[in-house]
Image 1 (cartoon, rainbow, N blue to C red):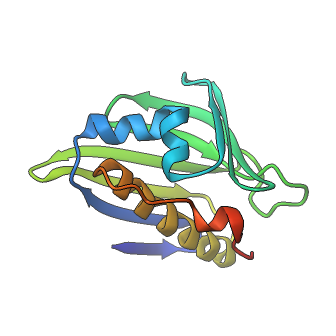
Image 2: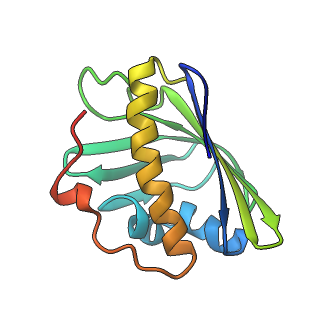
Length: 155
């Protein structure tokens, strides 16, 4: 379910047929992250530590870890390492909340402080794509090569 409550917030809730521990590893292990999002990832997994993910060629997301409560809650700043990006590195906040559910894990995802309805729309498109891939990997399905790596989305 997608919920956009104002022009600065994106929220999703997803049921994933996997344990919170499994989903958590897909969020914090660089080798696991690139199974569902990106070509390369580096993480310094500690509060104040930085991360970088080359999501698609020439598009690097980066920021800083704000809160790490394994395997329940992960908060980090988010943005793009591009000159004149409408969402510069570290300018927004992403939150993953994992709650045990009878069928696995309830993932509550939110992306805060997006600056405009256009950036909400583009990030909704991107997160829908990557959260679907995360769900597939968590449940043991190989999502295959990311089509956006060879045919990047237009902004």
